[in-house]
Length: 350
Ligand SMILES: *Cc1c(COP(=O)(O)O)cnc(C)c1O
Image (cartoon, rainbow, N blue to C red; front, top):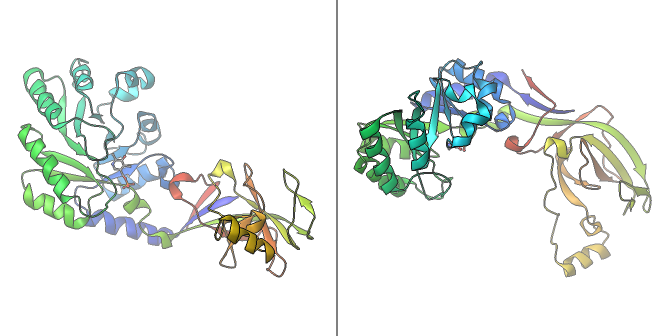
């Protein structure tokens, strides 16, 4: 079993502190729910008092809509095909659509039910959004035809490499030039200083920071991930094991632990230098990296252990060299994972 243990009191206190420090915050719940699951995050967002929850895709609405009472901002831009793919969920009055193309705005304005929309301005990310000129055209078209409720402008910024301020400044100039009637800007990845600067420079705009990682995963010490030891087999140098009939490079133990590709457990970089000469030198010394072993995310007695072979679907085989302590069957060992890419068998909140 691959388990996520949450120190509930510590986690909730981090959520509360972060929420209170970020006025206007829109919690983001998407993908695997940052490891916690979308439903749990939706309930937590309500508990925090959020008026709006952001989801990544239309498909995620179903998992959060009954667990959160407020508005639901969909981050992936609306496209004509989603109305057909997701039916009624797309027409829910609580849903706020992100619009990144002029033709999509036209289609939503013509839909007849006054959908709520946020116009996304393309940033240096070049993921989705309108150019400066298309933003002006969009606002002008809206002023002329109406047909939807404008809820502001969205800016999705890259993860910080230095300050975002000069880029935000340029983008805000476009927003102002477009004559945006809804004075609300939904932003991501601005730090506290940048948010304060933005608010000071544009006091007539409401700033809504969309925050996922910093909120849900901002206190890693509140979280731990552990896998159960399922089996252990003593091997001698030369013994065969595994799917591909490899041979043990030394005496030791093949340790079978829970967690595999189905959980998102992946290979890590090979240990040590990988060029041929240093590998040959390592081979001469009998190093395990020379045997082609790759570092695993499993830690036993605080030491990162090597995969005996690539992870299987639900279990992984590790190689423990002779002399290491062999954990008992049923014992739990620490695992380092990327929370956004891992499915846990269970989540235990204390
Ligand atoms: C995922 C996402 C966020 C939140 O990102 P974090 O790094 O998890 O805080 C904000 N805005 C958009 C558009 C996103 O896709």
